[in-house]
Length: 148
Image (tube, rainbow, N blue to C red; front, side):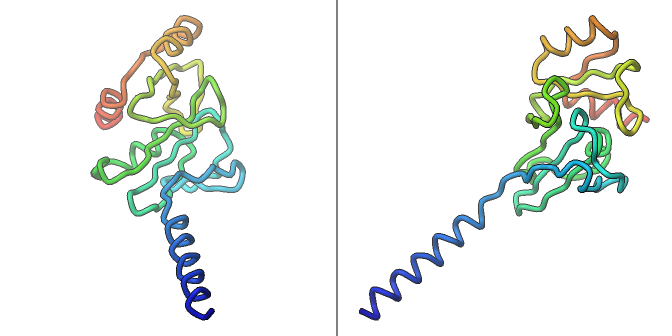
C-alpha cells in the first residue's frame, strides 16, 4: 500500500514539474503591467509587444519600438517568443518576425514612432492606402530604428 502511495506522489510531482516548465507568453494586463524599457503603464492594446526568453522570463512593452530597443544587442535565437499586437485586432498578439509593419504619422503609437504591426502585407497595404506611411519587414524595421 505504501509503495502505491509513493508512486502516486512521485507521479504527481513529475506531472506538476512538467506543467510548470511550460514556457508560454503571459497575457499583458493592460493598465497594470509596465513597460520593461521605459516604465510606462501598458494601456494601448494596438501597439503593445512582448518577448519571452527560452528560460521563461517575460518582458512586456508599451510600444513595439521599446521592445526593439530592448532587444538591441541580444540574441533573438535565445527567445522563445517575440510578439507584437496586431493593429487590426487589438489585444491579439502575433509573431514579430512574420508581422508586417507600418510607420504612419496618422496613426499615433505610445512612444511616438507611429509604428504599428499587422498580420499580413495585404492588411498593411490597406492601412497604408487609407493613411499613407511606409511598410517594413521585421529585419528592415530593426535596421531603420537602429539608424536613429
